[in-house]
Length: 66
Length: 335
Ligand code: SF4
Ligand SMILES: [Zn+2]
Ligand SMILES: [Zn+2]
Image (cartoon, rainbow over all chains, first blue to last red; front, side, top):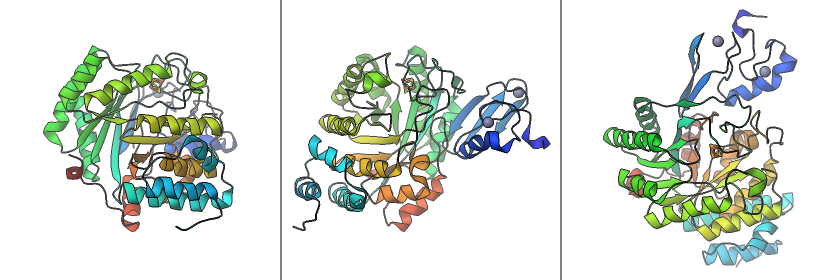
């Protein structure tokens, strides 16, 4: 697993996001969705979508944005 | 009068294109049932109707969620209901970020900015946020402010008018006969009641729904006819984007041909309304769908992202409008 992928899928929150077959649908969907789960701890993130982007934050692991 | 081999389109040409009247329910259903080979003719006629009764301008809008998630209602398609195990968490947008979103929307040339909250209806806190937010936007940006805050009391309707909200969105979502299959925590009639108050207040009425919730074609036609009875200033047309964790999460994305039939049918039912492409167009119709819709009766778009999902970049839509020689409706044309 590459370090960039993390431990959990940021769309479904399940493990092994590098398992391409299991998360192919998630990866396709993510083109039109912001992340929902923290890839480090699988907490649901607070996500704010605005017309031009999004921010997603985990209480433990900080914020991501588009 | 040109006649085709499709009698319902001939009837629509006379009634809708020439007389400006909406197609009746039985004929709306016929359009929804047209065989594949007649879809281009239906879209072409819908386009002519739109050009004749609305003109070439396209109304561009941005939307933003002021309060996301945690809604007490159970609309089965919605990732923002707090009653399902959806991954969407509750979050509030602060006023500076709201103003920034309005500025970014205005920078695309959009004339409309709609503030949305996932609630049954507004409470005092939300109304105060609206008061502060709309005031701050009006001080900073030239754009029409619309709102979508669920069911309203008469007092709240009056407050929104006072704030300068010019249009109110409240979707009926689907036809009256199918609504109880989709929502059980409130009724279609309650929604209709809010819409009547909004209409009487002088605010513009924006009311549409979602196609592909599992309704039959008869029910889809019923919905178009019920919208025509309401005569909203704007009808946003969404296509179901099945959201994980919701009761409709496993519903298939609708057939793109059925989506195109629906676009033509709704335009023929509502010749003079602003018919807006809203959520789900990307997943249902792909990149080409935007073009097909704009040449098939659609005359308004939401640009950029939606409330909890992402859209095409605004620039893709704006470039397409330029290519199609459809001017963006100017703010001055709406005041
Ligand atoms: S009322 Fe609105 S936000 Fe709440 S569940 Fe229904 S569609 Fe979603
Ligand atoms: Zn996944
Ligand atoms: Zn985390």
